[in-house]
Structure formats: C-alpha cells, structure tokens
Length: 186
Image (cartoon, rainbow, N blue to C red; front, side, top):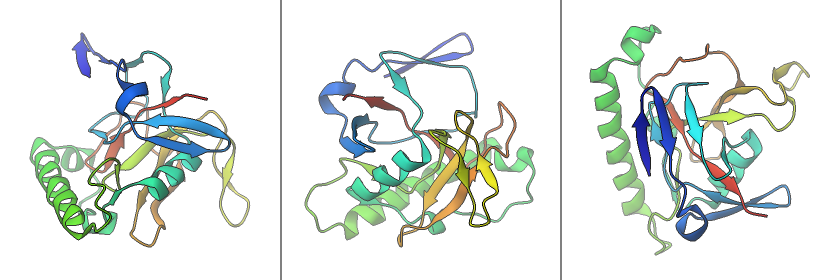
C-alpha cells in the first residue's frame, strides 16, 4: 500500500476502487481509505498515484457520518507543552499509536451495527485541501479554497476539536495528525 522512495512516500491505490468504503459528498462518490496513515507531515512529499487526493473538510464530515466505527477524539487529546519536540517525539508518537488502537478496540466493542470496522473515524485530525473558503461564525476566513491545512478530530456528538486551519508550517507533524487518502470515483 505505501512504500518509501528516498524522502517520498508512494501510495499504491490499485485496490482503492475494489475494497475501500464508498462515501458520497457534494454529488460525488469517493473511495475512502478505511484508516489513517498517522504521523504524516502537512505539505510533506507525498506522491499520490491513480487519482488519490486529500479530503476536503466537507468530505471529512461525510466520512464521519458514514463511519462504521466512530472513536471519541476527546479521549485521545493529551496534555502537552505545545512544543514540536514533545508533540512529535518518538515516545509520544508510539504512546499515541497504542492509545488509538485501544480506542478503536473500545469503540468496536461498543458497536452494535454488526458491520465491523469497514470505516474508522475520530482517531486523528485530517490533513485536508479546502474545496471552498471556510469561515468562522463571524465570517473570518479560516481556510481558503485550495489551501492545505487541518480539520476534524470529531467528538462523538459530531463536533470537531480542530476547525479548518492552515496553522502549521509545511513539514510540521505531531501525534494528532493523520492522513486519509480519498479517490473520486464519479
């Protein structure tokens, strides 16, 4: 599925059209990676093959609505000192990986749909590309069309911890961010 070529992560999507769950958003059908690639840097060198792209904030909400397993992001937020050195340390990234797996197991145990984990959400903030301008309630633009940023990390009530934002510089990453690839099918 993913391989490293120098400093570029190459994502193979040969099976995306076959086994990735489908989500409909804004009149289009999307194949959606069932899980995140964690620890991905915003704007990092990522070679997307076969038409894969970053989701928009609106598609992220549609993915949340379609998810068969919804994890509670508020259980994954951690206290930190705000420094990249701490938030992206090997110890914190590994601890967060374990916490995410535990939360997925907890959410799966609570699932009564019988569908299993076809599509998991709520485990990370999404790296997104804005499909339009996103503004706050006062009309201030938070993320401009075409801009790459962060969005999501849904609580169980559907509200997000992270509104649309381009706050971090290119190449920044921390424990809370994840990359979910999508591919427009129709």
